Length: 269
Image (cartoon, rainbow, N blue to C red; front, side):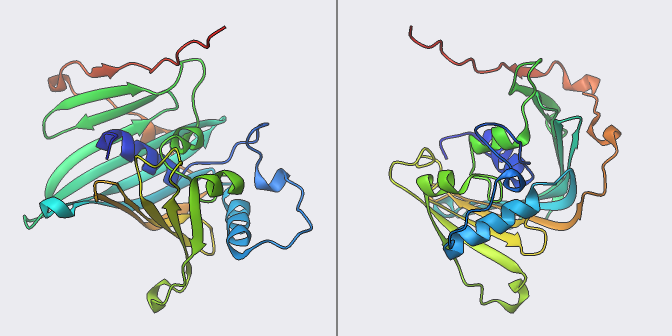
């Protein structure tokens, strides 16, 4: 991948649980008057998913993250817990990875914590005792998960259908596995001129047909790397205690590395 693993994970993890905001350029599905035209099957499914995901306020789930490098015959597996909530129109996300399995080695304790508060993405690695903070928005203009995610990953159920089809060829895939009968699968193939062309060749999304939220995401890079995320035993809109998103950087970690906000270049007059 041309982006770092940290930035990619930020995009894919935020994208997994992003939410829909009502604004002039991005209108929530429930605020859009239905068109009296026949939708094709893909549009129909996407519209239904949008209607189901627009009211997400909190989310908790176990997370399984696999990173595969077939050319190097390497694979890593990480397990953890994900928490997401929205308070007063501000997004909070916590991903606490707790174990790591590398190739054929036994699974071991390996803790890495990601905390997003609308402005900062903080990454704490408890094995190497390091802290890194990425500023992703202005202090007085906190960002939402959806807007950040859309810069790195198409968010099924939230991205506008026209925008999605401009960047990807989208098709429904018939799921023949009986164990996945309650899932909807979409396959996205990146178009040659897509803004995602340097990041993905294709992506597959499996969504729960009942709640419309992702169950599994698999992304393929031009370098033939594979990023796979599974979400298990989700708890939807049951509330998350705000203290879950509090954290302290241990003293023996030293000073955190700061990655400042990337400023947009001024427009030419």
